[in-house]
Image 1 (cartoon, rainbow, N blue to C red):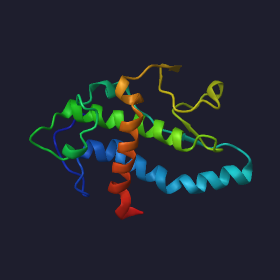
Image 2: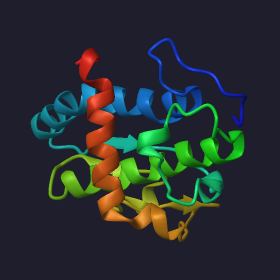
Image 3: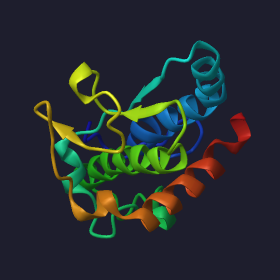
Length: 154
């Protein structure tokens, strides 16, 4: 969290790699199995993507797609915010793509919110994230960018 500039072994800025890309890859690899299990068992699955209020600290443009690995302009607080914003955008785009599917994209586990999808929770309540977190175009762009990053592992 808010660490000095470093790259992962895959040459991706470490906070973005750790807080977003790894989770995106795991979700991507498990998604087909989750869908088929939900169909066969007639029980919904849950994908829980955790973010934080730190998403509000992101760079002004939200996600710096062309500068993810730019050490010269790196700011550890903004980079952390960028990764946490990516978590929310990932959850929103996943919810949009899975709309109508048996799998529920979810950010909390409590039964009172069964069936709720694509919402941001804080202190056990639906909470309004910053405007970038609800930007559908930014979410789609992040999705495609992330798919390109994980392509070598799929």
